[in-house]
Image 1 (spheres, rainbow, N blue to C red):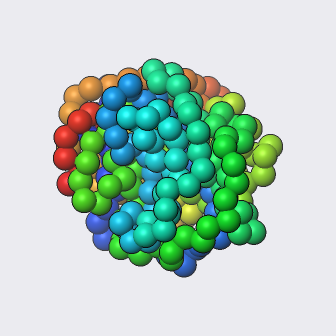
Image 2 (cartoon, rainbow, N blue to C red):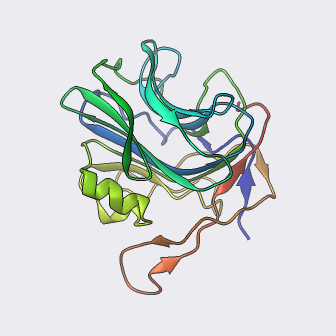
Length: 229
């Protein structure tokens, strides 16, 4: 049985540094299952009020959106509640695009994010000022390159980010088995899990590279209303 958290795995602390200096050619991706209510569930790199970037859910409007801190909310589109879906933000050669379940969502945008800083990489509730989010999150990852359409399609089909290790700089399965939550990349930046509860939920099978049973059932953490701090 896994351990879950309220309001998300806010990954912080000494080793959970922001991925600084990257403002173009990057990918942020994760699986989510959102409830019909709540706000501020997603993955964010930096200080959302001033810099950085992330892919977040506006659960009031049912919209998947990009946030460039200190710049604007951008792109995105509608998602379904109550079902597991795969989301990704890709910025390539100055152009940003959102993907949902491997397909493009909404229009492209050319805005430039401010350089991330603040020593935070948020999974779950992304608001540094505190907030709420209701739902589940799993397999959160970031690359310092733009993934291809075929790579995004594979991720949305259930393949682990570990199949695409080139420039993979953060990867948190968010199983809830450890605190700090592991970062399965060479940088090894585990994050402190906050607001632990005893709830669990199952996620569709994820394919991991290596031997053993290829389809592994993971149990990501649920996120419920409350303070993220």
